[in-house]
Image (tube, rainbow, N blue to C red; front, top):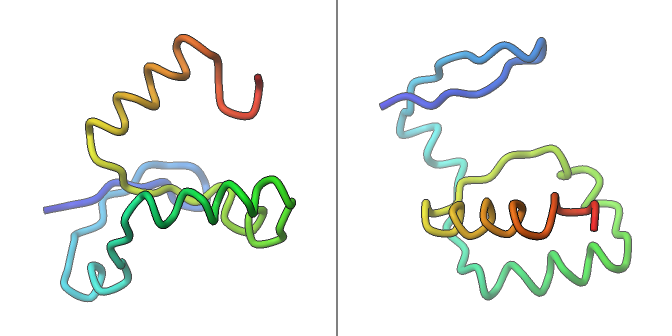
Length: 79
């Protein structure tokens, strides 16, 4: 299995998924994450700026919901 991400120059590069790579991640329930992110965003917490361009993995069905929301209500942060 491989993962594709952008390098520092913006080019898409293939990265093999290894056990060491997977050890960097932790599962978190959305219901635990969302209130923290929402409150931190509203309070303009510094760590939100540090992570604002990081990409995260979401389940396909949540990605569909996000895409539909953007389609009907515009991009996040622009409304």
